Image (cartoon, rainbow, N blue to C red):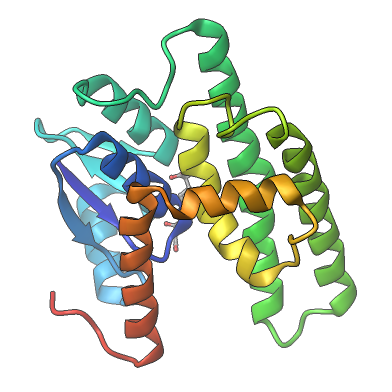
Length: 215
Ligand SMILES: N[C@@H](CCC(=O)N[C@@H](CS)C(=O)NCC(=O)O)C(=O)O
């Protein structure tokens, strides 16, 4: 299997967490869309401009982080399951995965875009920040009953949430959300996230120093 991804993309981090949780063997293909040539070649070869993208051992191309993780869960079977087989729990995991991608991650992209632009108005930033805090308040209440996002086992929903929290704890004040803080402490000790985080830090350092990795 090959994974086309970028370490600073949250959807890529989500899939990397799953790959490490599953202890899956894969070839990493770091793809940097800030380089127009790379973007063009990737778009021509794979007919998509989005990361992550999985190329399976049989050459099938699978886009969309949640679908990639479902594929891994079905095909890498000698490890913990990220999607529970019981229908009710499975539905709950998929629901939280959607809530995190659609209601939290998308707001984070808006927040990032607004805070990065000199033209943004502070009211717009505050509005998005408040929407994010509402989402985190709901999650905080939910986590008072759950060790991971869905009960006691680590699932697809945790793969989706952890990259969002990594950004959010650095850019928003979430310290009043006791359960979220507890969850974030425990997530930072998870081996799969530690591996992803090392790669994120390396990519951030490379980016800040204007260095590019050797292709
Ligand atoms: N729903 C997709 C979203 C993927 C996505 O939006 N990826 C971003 C990076 S995080 C991307 O490749 N954007 C294209 C670009 O940077 O031009 C998924 O879950 O994989």
